[in-house]
Each structure stands twice: as C-alpha cells, then as structure tokens.
Image 1 (cartoon, rainbow, N blue to C red):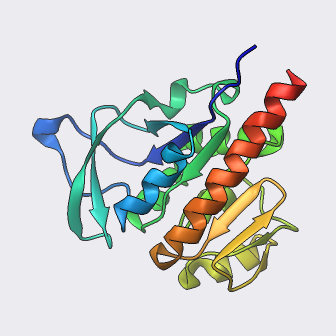
Image 2: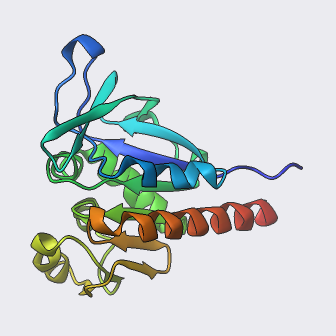
Length: 196
C-alpha cells in the first residue's frame, strides 16, 4: 500500500462567494511560512463553517488574499483528516468556538489521538471542546487566563507539544510552529499507515 500524504484541515469562521467576500477570516501573517507543511508533503484542505471563499487577513486588519473553501466542517469526517490546524487571529477563533460543528469536530479529533495544532487565539476552540484540562499549552497572552481557567498549564514558549496538541503563541513564532506541525503531522500519518 503506498504511503498516504497527511491531510491538514484549516478552519475558517466566515466565507462568502467572491462577489461578497468580506475581511473577517483566516489570519495569514507571513504567508510563506504556511507553505511549509505542503512543501513537506501535506495535502491541505480548507474547511469552514460557511462555503465560498475566505478573505484572509494579516494582523486582523489588512487583506492578504483569498482561499476557496474545500468543505464544510458540518460535513467533515474525522477519519478523512490526519491533523487539523486551528488558525489564529481574534475574529476567526471567536466564531469557531461558538459553532457546534467545529467544536464537536475538534473534540472528536483530539479524542481520536490525532494531532491538532492551534496558534494565537486558536486554543479558544480547544477550550470550548473541553480538551485542555491537565494539558500544557501556550497561546497569545490575552487568552492565557482562559486556558488556565479551563485547567491547562500555560507556559510562555514559542511552540509547545503536549501529546497530540501543538500550540504556538503568535505570528512571530510561525517559522518554528510550521516546522513543528510539518514534523508532527508527518509522523502521525506514518504512524497511522503502519497501524492500518
């Protein structure tokens, strides 16, 4: 059986058809760093709670391009994805953490043992999914109290890997975060292939 390339799911909170695109979604700072998982062999798909196109943002303010949504979180199967990536920014994670389908999907992936990566405010969805208690994580400084209140041990490091959870603080940490998720996602895919 040929080796399977890892699939990484990226989430967005809002999207609109191109004619209605609006600036409220995926934070894409230093976009070149985000190609590292693909250069490492990952097949990526963009999942959203709405279909259409995603208007990406840099620093939550400046337009930084668009992505076409590949699928809806409501229709996603945990078995189809090796490793979801929860993006940062403030607006996107805030929408995701109140979407029942996104929260349920993230909870199921974490419980399955597959890796889940989250950067900046992305851990908000992990909190809502109820999967941070007793885990060591990092995040953007403004949500560290939320993580502690949910039972996480919070540290100030560029990237933290605790079992199947990979977290990072901010866009400043993108190079090491992307290298870490490429390594972790690839090792998970190889491990799954052996088990299958």
